[in-house]
Length: 187
Figure 1 (cartoon, helix red, strand yellow):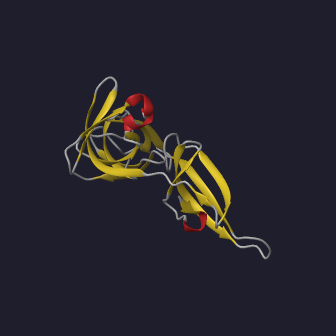
Figure 2 (tube, rainbow, N blue to C red; figure 1 turned 90 degrees about the vertical axis):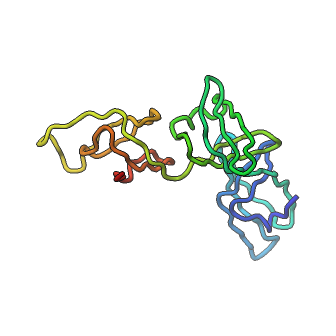
Figure 3 (cartoon, rainbow, N blue to C red; figure 1 turned 120 degrees about the horizontal axis):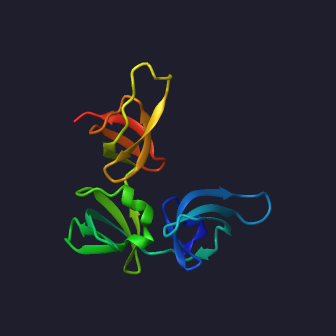
């Protein structure tokens, strides 16, 4: 249990039987009455948000979520396979629980696995990832408009809009939260 007044951004709380990560926290001390904590949380399991206003002296249940740095190994029909960088322990994460993560998983990259009650509940994808352009249409010089973009497909199947000068085989840096092109990466 943790007092609402001790909650900070990044704390994991248990609400509605599932773990939530505190993404925003604000204290409000009215002229009359008790101080309250206004908390905005995001579900680690499904990404839904929840807002609460709790008196600072009230206790809430904190979730014991463990983060493990693991290297992505491969995928089969049902699971993603990871290996713990410290203990070499193997983890299987059902694809059905994280279907949207398949576009961001690349071999030999380290990801943070969130483990709650012995089960992996989330795969923490890095904020920026380098991808190789697998499919790209060429454009004809002169067919350009200032700021024009085209869709490309990365080696993992992710579709990203990029400037027209990006060609197949080049590497690009992508923001994984917005799927936006950031820059071309030189080898």
